[in-house]
Image (cartoon, rainbow, N blue to C red; front, side, top):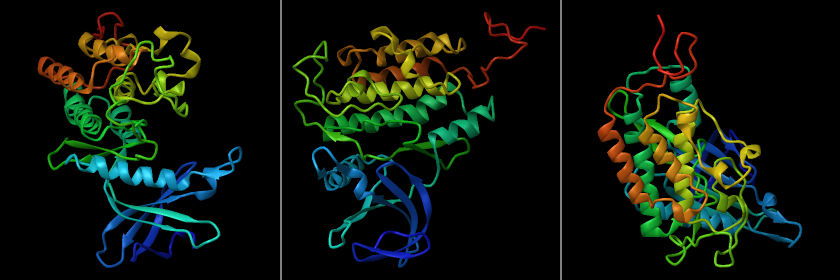
Amino acid sequence: MPITVGKPIEIDKIIFDVQKVLGKGGLSTVYLAIERETKKKVAIKDFLYKQFYDKYTRSNDCEEYWENEILNTQAQARSGYNCVKVLHYEKKIKYQTPEYYIVLNYIEGMTFLDFYLEFIQKSRGMKHLDLASMVREIFIPIAKLLDYCHTKENIVHRDVSVENIIIQKGKEHGEFIPVLIDWGISKHVGPDWIQYTPKPFMSDEMLRDIPITQKGAPPEVRFGYIPVAASDIYYLAHLMYFVFTGGIMREDSELLDKDSWVLHPKEINWYLPESYNEIVERLTQFEPADRPNMQAVIQMLTELIRINQIHYDFDYFADPDTNPLTGKKDR
């Protein structure tokens, strides 16, 4: 029977008491539940079977997506980093409408978007939220996990976004831990394709794939080519742009030519170090071949925080008493 808030459900011979809806998308709904025997919180992902029906091919790809998410979530969890993990899964095909479930460990925290709105926009100038801390505690750990996925598992996440990163509080005051979630549209591309970046990528040499048009997606993904490691690098750079430009997400109307895909955060936030601006520019080149690999990205970010140890808070928004040229308050 369909999952219902307030009622128990059995998955993989284990009883879970469903508490509430955590999130709902076009293809699935995620619920908070408690495993009855252990009393532990879990997240149950319910795949909406009918939403996977293709009226043109008269086929349903739900099982393919379900299997893909299980395998790729298990693969990234082998990294040893802070990860979402598959605890149980089951498909129930005896019903008229088949049911597909994945039980995941519950990640206590808030999305990167909520974290940004709560701690950055509302609490400007928090001493522990400086550029070096953000790079060290948020961006580098995400980059290291993605590097593992690229080099060891040949997987591209393909949706590194503000909604798909959960920020947890660390043990120390002001410490934050990022967890990359939702491997639903991730793709195992194999060793022959993970680093393959012909130039130009828009050619017969590059495999075609389903176009994905979410904000922050790199050109090769939006134009329907197979994602590669460089695609996740572009997604990461878009996050780096977002957090230091007042939460700006680039609009489709701005993508007029190849140069417009390159992000320049310092044009919005003049307080940013030029080195940070240059990193984002390099990571958002139109051609995947022109972006550095993830190990080089990690080295650049590590060098950035080594040089920029001075305090740099988030209070860069327009201030009537601030000189836009010098960044200093006029007396």
